[in-house]
Image 1 (cartoon, rainbow, N blue to C red):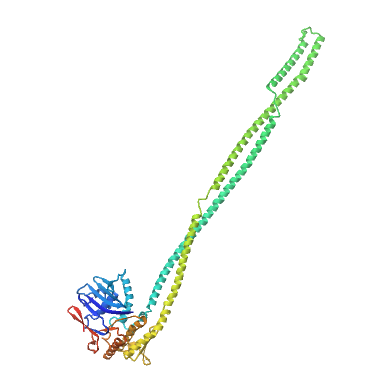
Image 2: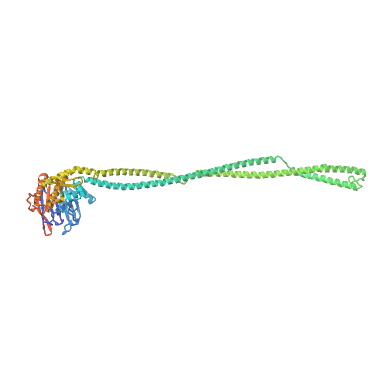
Length: 582
């Protein structure tokens, strides 16, 4: 990917006023010269702000705005990517952002961050790489060999375009964090489901016990009532037996003995009275006969023979009455009384039996009614249903188990994702693909650095190992970076930076049309080193990379005799700077 920068325009930025300042980018070796404080490094600030929304130097955003006009700062850059022409415009006070493609506005995204991410993709480079391989400034760039191992490695990964592995690793770690968080939540939910299932299972067990107790009590009640029916049936059978016995006894008594009628009793009493009267009369007559001369019977003169005859007859009649008639009648009377008493007793017994029969029949009827009531009660009890059912809770348990199964599948899927992501972390880590690519690409970096060291006529070799530890040799002797002079260190630094610029084209298939080198040669570099350095840059743009425009920003190169493609002079007049092209 080749980004061809055409023009940058800016106004009201730092020392530049409200008139547009335009810089057309050209190929070849170019010089931007000015005195300190006149605004030469502002060009890098303008480019960096327009492309990435930040100053190039370590200043605050608000400090970019020209302090005299204090507003309406605008920067615009035109560039080509392939056959498409783009224009980015940014501003402060008021904030402004526009992106055009082939003259048509491109809709802005929802946030500054998303806008910048899209621009980075469009440019094929981020701000960090821009500051290290496109815009190199002594005031902004720390020499590579003075960086920490981590910073070195991060920058190399960025240049080698394998920082995507680090970004992927970061994304995977974020994903792992989210997955673990989600896993904790899901495990908590699963625990909650299991607790709810256990609660419902416990409730079901309690309901089962209640139902079993209900059914057991129901069974016992029915058994007791059925047993009551059996006992009542026995009593009814006994009633029936007693009723039969009573009826049979009444039948037996009723047809067996009779009592003489009242007429017969009256007649017998009359006969007894008559016999007693006759007896008394005979006895009276006999007494009279003994004391009278006249026969009380016939009224004749009582003679001895006549009296004797009458006495004998009376005595015989008396005898018959006393010995036969009256005893017979008394016997009959006794028999009548005995018969009457027997009949009376039988009637009393019949009455008693009848009363008992009534009692037995009453009890039987009551027992039968009670049995009917008990049977109805049994039906009622049998029809009773427990007020608690298992259906609701069993359905709930089924639903909860289904939900838990689904949740367990989610947890299982999360576990699987975590397992894969943890393996990815190993693959994307320092000992994984990054280490592999590092080992494959480091020889290219070392080769390019030594190529430029040779062009700078530095009789040294430099090699980085996989941990970005450098080894510098002069001949066969090792030498520390800080042992070199300022000019030598500058050439080593530039050899590394130029290697970065070229490697980005080789490795990432990315390059651009400009390279800014700001005041790198203005301190610590002798005249010989400057000439060698500029000669090397001239060869790069004239022989190796004719599509590149290198801009040297300096206030010391005025006297160097170089066939510059373009010289841009910056003059500060009064409060504002002006840019002139020669």
